[in-house]
Amino acid sequence: MQHAVPTQRAAGARLHTRFTRSLFGQVLIALVIGTLLGLVFPEFAAKLKPLGDGFIKLVKMLIGPIVFCVVVTGICGAGELKKVGRVGIKAVIYFEIVTTIALALGVVMAYVFHPGTGMNVNPRTLDISAMAAYIESADKVKSTGMVDFLLKLIPNTIMGAFSSGDVLQVLLVSVLFGCALSVVGEPGRPLVKLIETFSQTMFKMMGFIIKLAPLGVLGAVAFTVGKYGIGSLKQLGFLVLLFYGSVAIFVVGVLGVIMRLCGFSVLKLIRYLRAELLVVLGTASSDSVLPQVMKKLEYMGIRKSVVGLVIPTGYSFNLDAFSIYLTLAAVFIAQATNTPLALGDLLGILAVALVTSKGAHGIPGSAIVILAATLSAHPAIPAIGLVLVLSVDWFIGIARAVGNLIGNCVATVVVAAWERDIDRERAHGVLNGTIPAGELEEGLAAPHEHLSVQVPVSAPLPGTASGR
Image (tube, rainbow, N blue to C red; front, side, top):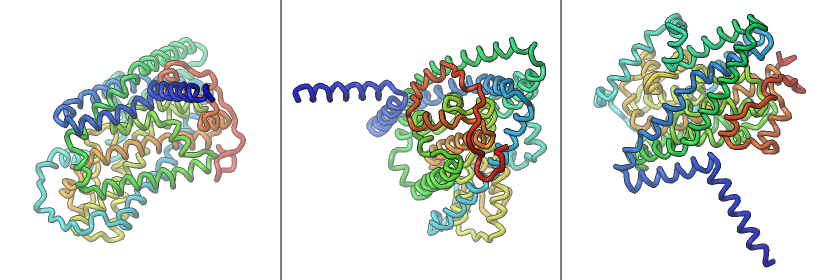
């Protein structure tokens, strides 16, 4: 009994040390400190914004090269180009189905809870000056047809794809380069080895940058609370709360069922990615964790070629939470301005949003811009009503980023299961915690040999005859 208390204290000390040394613990502590700074020293906290902006810029600096390395080495290790095309087609099919469900959920939630009913806002009394820049950008998006959108995917030069920061342009260059290198065959092996070494170097650099994540989160959260205050959540608070609830329902209900059909748990996946999700929660940007999320999905047994194609593509084509926001906000504005909507209007909004949502990534203030483009293309709802949601867009953006990231990770698991490119035994071990994930920076720095080996699974994705 005399040794029981010291033993318990030692165990508690070890647990405390492990928590404070982990990225999850450090980011959580940064969230608390940032919130307190914003409440107690709001003016000082508002000046900490560069910490968050700087961290995101550091991560974005490496996204292009990392995507290139992962995609090229993944294609070269896939063994056949038909497989690469098959993965891409299945990913796009999945994206369209799930995005449509998300858009429909936004409409249903708006009509069930009526967040804008009773506001009785007269559009003529709203200040259009606050929306001038967004509406101008929205006109450009609206005037961009499918041909222009596809042409935009083609960079002016190969290096231009990396300098622009457009993930889809980098993906196009990477796929073409990887396919060509795969066709070259044995003479290209030294170059493949060089790219693999370069990839390890890039992930090592990312490991250095990730250590700054708590500082970036602290700056972003302190700025938000310091500038807007906790009380700012009361303004249009019901809409914010409803959106968070909608994203939760989509993740647990829709994505949870999809993951269960594949034999996995979405809650365990969220727990596995909790450190990355906390970074997104603090910075309101899923870009800030793209490289490390790709590495962690590989670590749990998903083939590199699948991760390298699905995740970067999903960042522009599989914006689940963003899709919920588009339709929810559109109907909210209609309700707030007493604008009647017929069934044809709702179907029109769904159809337009299904197209405009694909151009969201990479546009400054993308949520407001794309929403403006959606409403401008369907003039039944006054676009000036966007002023109503502008003030709370940052808070809504947090759930958008988190929901989009979870949706893309689930999509990767689904396509991998569909293609039989996931080591189910290892995936369950990692998600259940029997196979330790280790520190994030260690996972980024060290490659895992098993990731390049295709392991057959015991059963195809439900609903398919062969899983192919």
